[in-house]
Image 1 (tube, rainbow, N blue to C red):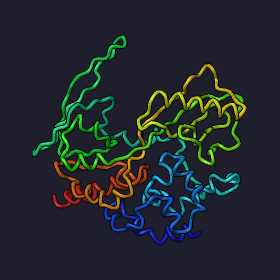
Image 2 (image 1 turned 120 degrees about the horizontal axis):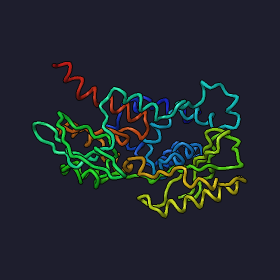
Image 3 (image 1 turned 180 degrees about the vertical axis):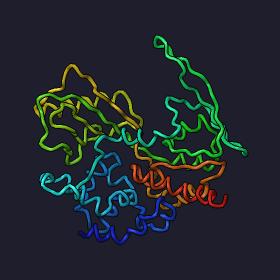
Image 4 (image 1 turned 90 degrees about the vertical axis):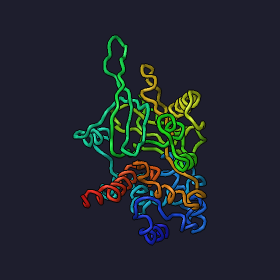
Length: 342
């Protein structure tokens, strides 16, 4: 209750999309664990480990408090705790977390239905010029006997909006960065995260989602998810040891999953190796010190320079709601005003 009250009093600060001005609140620019201690809320550390650490946003002594506080709204935290409770099935659904019935894939397909989305494209260069943006890219044009023929093409645009993960080395391969852009991107941090799924025979979890508490060693699954009790598919979520995902990380994760499955009393369906394995650099963020020193104010100052805008999880919080909210704010601030003037 004390956390809900404190978070409610901070609602105006977190209602505004993005992080401009967050450096004016140095008391917030500390780790989430330190913030909990400062407010005598250490008892909530375990509760925050589930939606923060297990979901790939880092340990509580790593993640800056503003990120976790924006993510952990009072209503959201209560809904999460109720959803994770053993008695959740008897709680009205309006008080619990909800999910897309047909998954995120169908959502994105419907959103993109009327848009000019170009798939399987490899961007080779982006040139930012005074008169506009020129993008050169390759795309497959023919597939014959497993031989793929690529064609090179180019397109011209008025503006460039970068919405992909800002890994400095990747961006520099296709675009010349300004000194300020290069410095801002060099400060980014990521979490190596992986999701693996197997078909597991002879076991049905009592709950659809199980958290490993206390948190296990890095590289072991933190969440085990069985979407449907009548389906053998089981999903495992883990933070990886390496800064960049490696084959050794995959091997270690599989060893941990095999140990978990034996503890459950089940077995991995031998006809199905990896049902799926995806590992990537997750949770684009910066340190609490960078937030305090005006990192995000610097980003806001260069939005629109060289006809370039930046959006994505880094600029609010790395979840769909934060990405959409900040993107809408950028469009309204920089494009709708121009449209009204026209």
